[in-house]
Image (cartoon, rainbow, N blue to C red):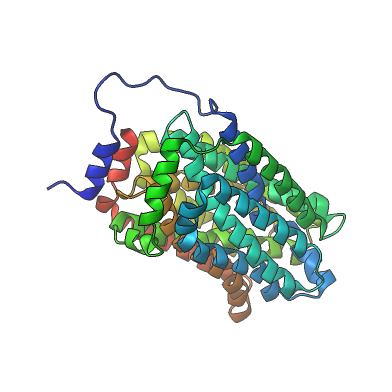
Length: 422
């Protein structure tokens, strides 16, 4: 009996003829570059706050727990909003959905720079997360649909944009933060205005065929679609694994910044450069090494190895928390493993189940951002409950849970490599 996953693979396989000649990932229409640029700016928000956390703590008289809520509110709203992006996108269309997300990000980032209480910023970051959900849920499918080079290379291009955004975010936060903690928020708002103009003028209107498909999808779209998608075991396993893995990811992103700022007294410029190095490693491996690992060793084996290596960096940070050099090196090295894994798991999710890609992305993103919402807050709580080494050890433990879950279910996941081969 043919499994749904294999039917999905066959449905997308080309019928007959010689294989198409290889095309460069960078051979893209201008609309794709406009979306990629906007993606870079949107993902700056992830690491933008990192370098200014110590400054915000001092100037706003905030506690560590309050600072972590800047990430928790952002990720929690993103997770929940992912469940409704499919229905809203079906009504608005891809272009208007992207523009709406950009406007929301610009408004809430500007407002976040205008208030004086840390809890006000926490709530405004939640609004920022809503805008990011609208944008992120649509950007990948938009790039795939407009691209000339196929799904796999389109995903890599998107991950490059994500990696660059994550890496530039801390640099921008560090440099502008040296002026004022408010400046990075205003900087993102200004850049989103530029992104809005690029997509408005460079992204084409939907064709008659696409409009007809959109009308059809309006009738079909349902708030229950992401939950129905999770009945596919492969998609659920990838999503749950990503929740565990993201717990480690955001432990590193947030708690490592607090450790470097509070224990090792790294200034705003220093923190910006450390996480710039981390982000550049993430971006480089996303595009250069991840595809090679996938082709040579397969997606599942490669993911497990990269996650094991990431867990090892967290354990090293837990053991040598008081050693500034080790913490800095491990943060930067971890970027390589995270970049590889991000591309591998995103590609796998797109081929995990016989459903529309935006629905698969929404279901998967809902689960993974739950991990991102819980990790920052509980990392600080673990430090309070146990000691300042504990968050790294526990974060590494969650990453190991992701490896165990993937490996135990590998026979249900192997079809993603068959789909990628086609």
